[in-house]
Each structure stands twice: as C-alpha cells, then as structure tokens.
Length: 271
Image (cartoon, rainbow, N blue to C red; front, side, top):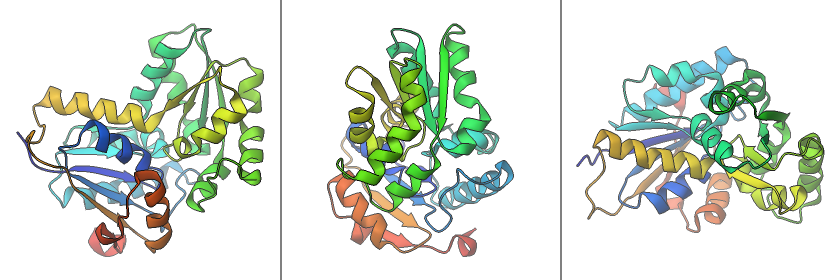
C-alpha cells in the first residue's frame, strides 16, 4: 500500500470535475489539487507558455511527495504532454482515456471534440482517436469562451449567455451528425447539462473528468500504489488567486464546503 497523495492540477477550477469523479471511484486516496486561477485560461496561450506553467505546477505538487500526477487540463494534456512524460512518476492527462471511451461509444463513427484553442490546434484528440480506429470522422470545435463562463460561475442550465455560446460552438458538430462528443476540457463537464440540452439526448457526452478518474484507478492498481483500503481519503486545495469564487463553484460541484481546506499560494514563491 502507498499512502502518498495524488497530485492533480488544472488552469483553474475545471479540474474539480476530475476530483469529483476520483472521490467516488477512489474514496481511500488523498488528493492535493492545484488550480492556477491566477493564470487561467491556459487554452489561449502559446505551447511554450503552457509547458512552462505545467512544469511549475508539477514542481509544486511534487513538493508533497505525490505518487502520481494527474493533468486535469485538456490544454496541458495535449499541448504539454512532453512535460508530463518527464515527471518520473505515473501520470495521465485527459486525452487517451477520453478518446478510448468515445471510440467505444460511437455507433456511426462520427465523434465531435470540444476544446480550448490550444487543444484543438494540437490535433491530439484526432490522432488518439485515429490510432484506435482510422475510419472514424472527427469534427472539432474550439470553445475558448466556455472556460471563462465556468470560471465566472455562469453554469446554470437556463443561463441565456452560456446556452447561446454552447449552441454557437457545437452547431458544426451537430450538423456533421456526430453521435458522440468529447468534452475535451475539464471545465466542460461542468456545463454538461447545457451541452446535452443543446446537442439532444441522442448524443453521448464523454466526461473527461470521469474517464480520467477511471484511468487513474487502473494506473494505481497496475503500479501497486493504492492507498490502504481502510483509509478515508482527504483533499487539500490550493489556488494562485483569491479562494472565494473557487470555493463557491466547488460547493456546487463537490457538494461540500471546502473553505477550510482551500489555500492561496503564490506560485512564483513556491517553485
């Protein structure tokens, strides 16, 4: 058994969708979460900047002697995968687990991918999906505004602005006939009720946070580093900007008040 924590990071609070799934699937594991809210969004940055930020985030998490690093960020997973590979620890991003789930889910072999500009421009989801099945058609949509809407807590299913943005972004995917859509940014599962409403019930949504958590469970078992089965997992949260909005959204997503376990850190002082 290995009682070291799992380190999870994202550009902001979208990675809480991964934490939510991990808490259900891995109730015995301790989690250290870092949300780089002072520098969100990552999706509009250059690859070089994303790589720098990711390396700094990972360095912070490794200070807690984490046994695994989880990039709960679509942009890092696709634009800075090389940084993950150099950690010297078991790692995962969202790309491979989500692509695998989408390929298994599609019936008509047309898969839509929603992501940030950096994620879509990288072509990583296309490559991963094609590696599973070269006959699948991939239709991608860059949705940069959605990250800001989630970070601003505009997530109500009836929010007119968010509904309009989602409709505009996914219209090409729906028109192409996709029966499966990968929510290729961990912010997007938070908007799943809105996306499902706009896309229709006949479209399967792939929750990247859930698929990533499933992969983490597999990796812990494969590496023999699960925590003690009797241990009750705990979480600590760190953000690089004010904690209030983060805690407000976390209360909705996680169903609990994390104010006492959420701290501000100056990322430039701890790296």
